[in-house]
Length: 123
Length: 109
Image (tube, chains in turn green, purple):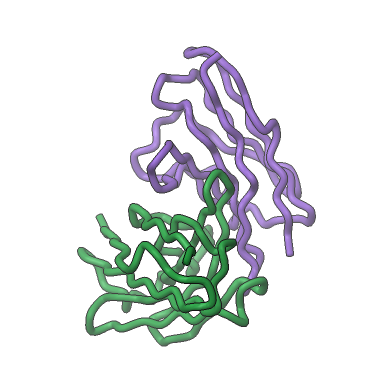
């Protein structure tokens, strides 16, 4: 098992910055086979991939969010983090962290997920 | 961006019946990069199938995946009570493209 656990504020004001952290226990974020990802799900809607980070700090973001998103990693703490700036009500969602297998074939899938943390954008 | 369209939106079936879920891509997707997930209310998605047809660890063999190119299928051979949930397909199309379908809800008839 590779438990992942999201943490961070559940309420963010419009125009401010959303910050979440995912702590990975039972495994190392420095594995060369996996990338560490954020995904969100607005209420009653489908899943939306936000971006992912490799242990080398290489990142890739959803083009629709790239201007507002930063994902970083701290290998010493087995954590990776999400920052989303200038939030609006449209950013209200459950935010999940997940492990993404992107080395070898087949790949490109999320095999472990955190339980998710709800974030509401409201004044 | 590759768009995944799932059908039907909702599938109403009885326990013991067979469920066939479709995922159609707007462009060809490598079978190596197509996955299916199950999501129950209030829970995170769970990986069912990766590489279009490989079952994830602990997934019973009543779940199977097939397809290639732009058409993929998830089949649940005999529905059990715990299988009623929302199912999502997902593709990885090379950096940085990664998209999910809009989901199919399998509900009890």
